[in-house]
Image 1: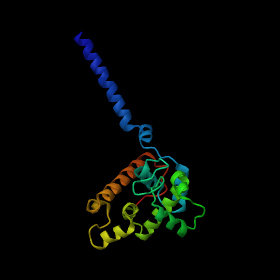
Image 2 (image 1 turned 60 degrees about the vertical axis):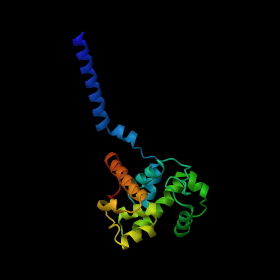
Image 3 (image 1 turned 90 degrees about the vertical axis):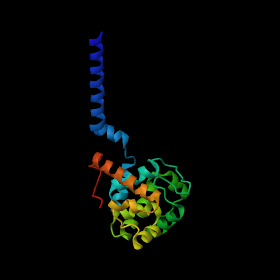
Image 4 (image 1 turned 30 degrees about the vertical axis):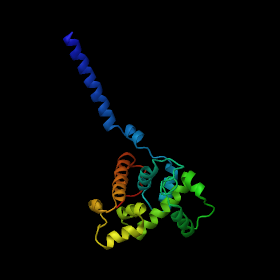
Length: 195
């Protein structure tokens, strides 16, 4: 009887160990846990606006977890959670036509294109500093410029803990967490490294 219990425990431990090994080491489980939806739209916008597609995917993951039709408490719309005023500005500056708030809210391709254009604009505005561009995507470029100019934050990933807005600090950390996960799981999807 005692011997049978030992065998059962050993078998159970082996099964648990095997499943843990599969869970930790398997790309398919990782891709199941960290999917990237709308890959064609993300790739098209990444190529059009010179962005890393994995960064776009990470922002979408943090903003809405790839769910269309979302509207935040503050009124941000779509997969990439763009504020209506920002969307209007992007539509005018980029020369997009026939884009409505309803399209931004419900159409993944429209949200990804407008959000990517805006992220690219921030990336250029902040001299290619991706960390600062991601912070500005969340807090707005005016706030981020203030933090940089008054020395509150130096704009590096290493000093993200100095960002005075807890929401933005957490946002930047989460975006780069998912970016690194995606980089590990989808190396074939990346076009370029993020700085």
